[in-house]
Image (cartoon, rainbow, N blue to C red; front, side):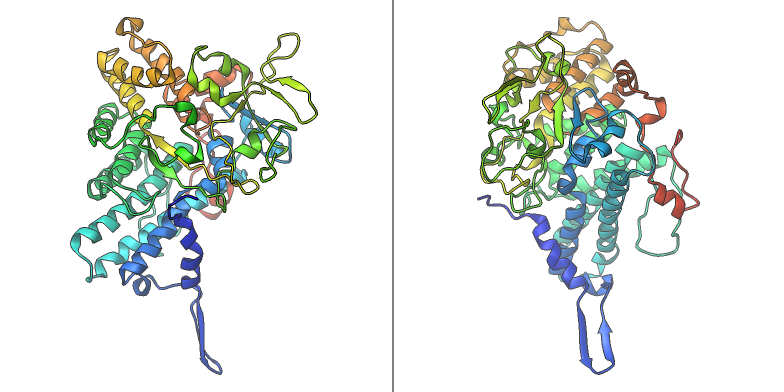
Length: 484
């Protein structure tokens, strides 16, 4: 059993505290249907409960199939879905036919803004607490700012700039979007100042420490093409000397290995729920499974062309199932049919099935940022700044050596574009099934063109999703993203 404290296990208790009612005598009832922040955030216990509630909304492990796959991989060259009731919801994202009515977009919007709301509650009231040392108050404020900054960064990856709500006051119930420059500047400052005051180590897995703050800042700088800042933030993570690559990449994601030095920022999962729900979608039909596992009709499949793009000696290939014998004794080739035609049915078993899974819930933690990502992010940023260089190639080779494939040389790359294209390929091989492919393709300028090459009706505006229609209807000052 995991020896971690899952943050969301305390959420129910927090909500109970926030919705208690009390009756003293007949017709004299105090009903606490909503908590008063100035009363609740008066002690360290109250502060911690508000933070736990905020973390629980920031961590989308309960909705991983929508966040990491439907929105982040199905529109790419890695993964598709077929079968089950989920197919009708997945197809618009596979075929670039999504619109503002998507319930998935609405769910992400509400979840991130709820995390922002909880962070705002703490930031507005924490200075009234005089019983804690200044250093600990600064840490709690840094955690709240991290949560708020990361929630907005999460929204930015999907929607671009969104309204910045920085108070729980009701003065402006219909905020407009800031400019992209204003939004990026705010998030950059928010995450940077949060990282400055976060502790080197936390008491609970899943909470933000300095490494987490710097890693999230690195990725935000990278995705907004602030190359020098991305390179510098990545170097800060490396210089913490806290992280290293796990030796056996093919076993990294197994439950028994998740307490490793490569994972920086994670969404903790437990089999009791909320858990990692990927594997029930990855098992092929009639795959021999344990009695405590489940196999969904909704099947997550990997494109044959992607699997065949790996070096034949790549250890990361061991995380794919490309052939299996089902419970009826029939053998299936998941790469191609008898005529050699690609069937796009390989299965990623990156999240090795949890032996103690409970139905759909596996206990495999979801890595949001790994050390390998920091290495390749710095390599990419340095290339964008200077073109091919020895350090970028050295950082790239650390990941390739761990994968068991030949190292590259500086002479392999004659232009910035050639190294950029290779780093994009390397990120695909390293981070498949981790929900990074959409943002990587967008950053490289290949998201739309790649989709068109696959026969999809992709247009330039598809690099952003539409704001949820319910938000547009409720707020006349909120302008819909172009093209929708």
